[in-house]
Image 1 (cartoon, rainbow, N blue to C red):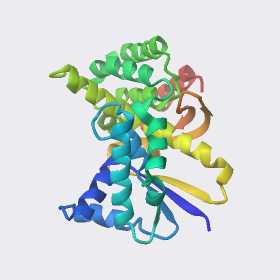
Image 2 (tube, rainbow, N blue to C red):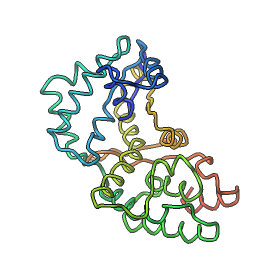
Image 3 (tube, rainbow, N blue to C red):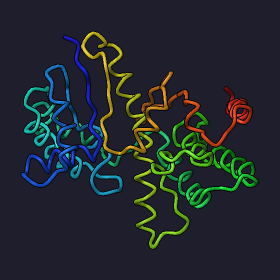
Length: 275
């Protein structure tokens, strides 16, 4: 039987934990989660665990604790769907997972953090038509400065914010000034973590490629409509695995990510991106 792999976002896992503990959960969200409880689904909190609970990169001990807590909650909530709870709840396997993802080290992570930190003050408010070319040049310059691949979601979503995509703005959440360094670090971490969902899904799909007869479908489930609109407008066309974690992705981005561009301006942007 071909399985459908359902990757739960952190907000979905939080709702699952609230359901299991008897706390209030919006009835619409509960129904959506219950709709995933089907025998052909394999439901996993793996992406939520990688992101962590603290808004910063987590060490192995914290990841191990999060993994066991969230795997147990998912296993308790879903009655018909398969889960990876039994697999991860052993100390040895939880420890192996935490060792791999401890401190959330992924390919080019620091580059993305540095890039987003400089992008936030550029895009914190809508850019006037006469200034868009200048800001677009600055974004390309920052990508070169930090070594960010032009087809990577971190860069493309920044362009989408510039050109008026509301979901991209809600995902990047740019702000000019933060009240503290800790607040800035958390905001930057959360934005990069959300955008890396796309490359993390590519990594998982690359791992499953040799097992296509078992997994015919991979879905990211989230209540974040902004992030979902970005993901739905993105198609992974290729990926390269790295020994230091994660993948480099080649992705195609739908025209609807850039609502502020007319057809001629959109084609010009594609040429600049090398498309």
